[in-house]
Length: 472
Ligand code: SF4
Image (cartoon, rainbow, N blue to C red):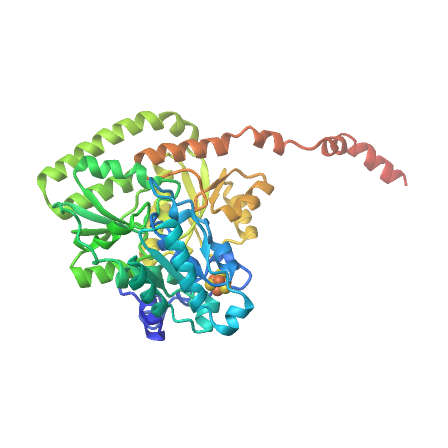
């Protein structure tokens, strides 16, 4: 893939992405064109986005062609878990020096690939370009091609220099690498009438494992997971699926659209968070296949699972009923977590519309009702102001807001990619309820909210101090 301006424009203006229509078709949403902000690496550059999308291919090696800082910034930033190979967890980089920047880094890259294959024998190697290697003009495609021919292992170039744009664009660039070099390169051993792909579910904290058994029970086969707990070969044969199920619409929408065009695979967008969404997801997949037996089987699973869930959630629903939550997260989670919290009897008083599409915003409005606050920006001051104004009981947000909440003595739950607990599927909702309950009812809050000894002393002696001051 050549990283031309028209290619980037094409990725930023995917027809299926609601962000395109924000300006009545006149232009792109500002967040689509946003470039990485120097010094704020956690926001993520395009390289970071591409590695987020591809690193969960667990039996592949992921080699970052650039200075060591790029690799250091992104390595292990997501807790995508593997049920088998651990090659994806190794941090490989060519670690370019000033000399390489002057004389070119292609030889060093070739040597790194050779060394990596000899030592680790991965199923494939993904090679990521970064700002520096794109600027000095290293020919990634040529090096990868030469190495593929020599070592008979797929070496896949990923054109993802950070300067081209945001993390979201990087996700799509990762998707482009899969479309160009991986999907359709191998036939599956067998196919079934109910083969689906999951797109955009990265198995953070192992949450996909709470959902896969449900599909299996229903008789729906997940042919390829793009790309949570994925194996290289399954992604190669993803073109034989009958349906693509997108879990985060924006991230890899280019893959879903291209697969529809190239392989005639339709796609739907679903969420695994909360009872309602999980039920809807299973029903929509069954409805897509239109098989009455499958539809009935799915209904039986839903009935069985929700009955079990009601028993498991009963104590938590009692504790969490009426508790007020301010939610600050992005994309699909802005509404899917609202739905999950409402399943637990909680009230979401505010949520963010950060990275949300127009469709997401419509769903948020419907879920929150007329009094709900939609947060465009989430600076620490703004979050604290909203928590105070709405008398919220806790803040549910990404890890970087943790200290904002804790310093203000507000219970906090991490909902983003750094979290260590799986919240997807029916089983995930029990985990989420437990975590929410522990956050709200932690005994620490009564301790830290008590006035300090010196504040008590001051209160007790206030009248005395006032008298003394008056006497002066
Ligand atoms: S690719 Fe560029 S923006 Fe991204 S971490 Fe490396 S130097 Fe920074």
